[in-house]
Length: 123
Ligand code: FES
Image (cartoon, rainbow, N blue to C red):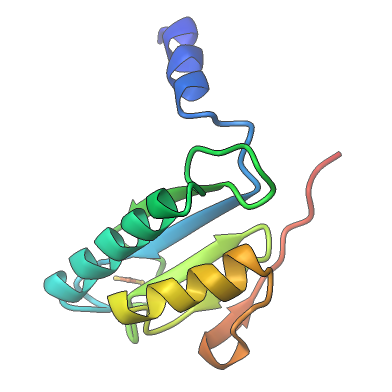
């Protein structure tokens, strides 16, 4: 393992500066392949367009596409930390509103959330 190389990559990705981490499940047990890919593209585009993915501001987000979050229905499933809000049905058309309300304004969209598991920042 090349720890220095890993540190270099992490630095390039600005890991350590993010306020949120968004996981989007596009596994085929919870949505169609097309729905998942469209949602992922919308999430990437929205974060880039609003300068939320590489900025170091209070809303900066890291994003990760995953294959399963063990819910396996009603997807695409989206999970955002540190709030720990689990969203269902996050098709591409919902992504802009999610970015506006949850990420920019910090207001959860309760009607789309099916579970909560907030994580407190370790001092
Ligand atoms: S395939 Fe998406 S939660 Fe399992």
